[in-house]
Length: 371
Ligand SMILES: NC(=O)c1ccc[n+]([C@@H]2O[C@H](COP(=O)([O-])OP(=O)(O)OC[C@H]3O[C@@H](n4cnc5c(N)ncnc54)[C@H](O)[C@@H]3O)[C@@H](O)[C@H]2O)c1
Image (cartoon, rainbow, N blue to C red; front, side, top):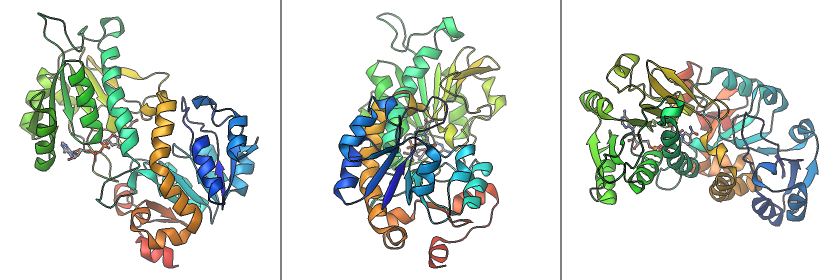
């Protein structure tokens, strides 16, 4: 198969769909790889490194989109990339379509087959291609919170770990999945006071065992939320209902309960965010204030550490990408884990939660692939 790797064009996105090491694996499996010139610049991989790995370098993204049978990216295609995608082409990347009607319509019009990293599953029903970026975003969320808490940028002026004799910051993590667990690990490591809320009792039990008392766990109810946000210096939004828009757990009214200058890091912003007052921001301008509360809502947090993120992402995507490259659409028919990644196919939404979120017609994958 001819596999294309365009340079990412989203603001401050420096990751790359295939690292040189991954290119070498595709080439060793008999595929051709075309990489846009400069695509690896953000991870310090020059064109020559890609050539050495067996890729051809192409200057024009239009050529890549026109020639490639499969496009491997990191972020969702941007507006000017939608018309470049075409019928019969596989797109393998993060999409996050549930809160994004315009992009969904762009993909539907292109006729491409869009496999979303974030809904590909593994044997245990987990989300293996979301996990590595969730690990990065979870860990980064605490660094972002620490920076935003500084008085010099409008924060409460609290040091995350405190010092001997002075209380550390109180960090509330809503959603104890991959993001939440890694945020809590970083925060515990800094000696902050950490509480994790979740709706899943089995997950709360796992977290309780893992942290051995160094982080508190609490079942997430409206009452628990009210109480916990009123004490917190930092609230990390890390909930996920797979494929759906994030539930809005903290309303604007509830912000009144929070301490002035405290910080919200809404990691779930890529699924629409779990705070009513969240809207996506960029690394250029990561924060804004609403009712005295600092909001950090960068939708592509791992893009800030592209070297770590690109390698972590490629480690996870490689086996799935190689299966798609080897078998094309047949891989979606025969591999249930890849099939669960199929969000859009030849003008149809094939992921139920996306169709429901956007009020669009849904076509079951089996029916769409049979046509
Ligand atoms: N902004 C970014 O750059 C970035 C990067 C990576 C991941 N994310 C996003 O972070 C979010 C979390 O991802 P994850 O991998 O940790 O997901 P996950 O599935 O591992 O964890 C989600 C957790 O939320 C819990 N949950 C669901 N509904 C809840 C509720 N009402 N109250 C409390 N807990 C609830 C679930 O039980 C689960 O434990 C996702 O939206 C993901 O897309 C964002």
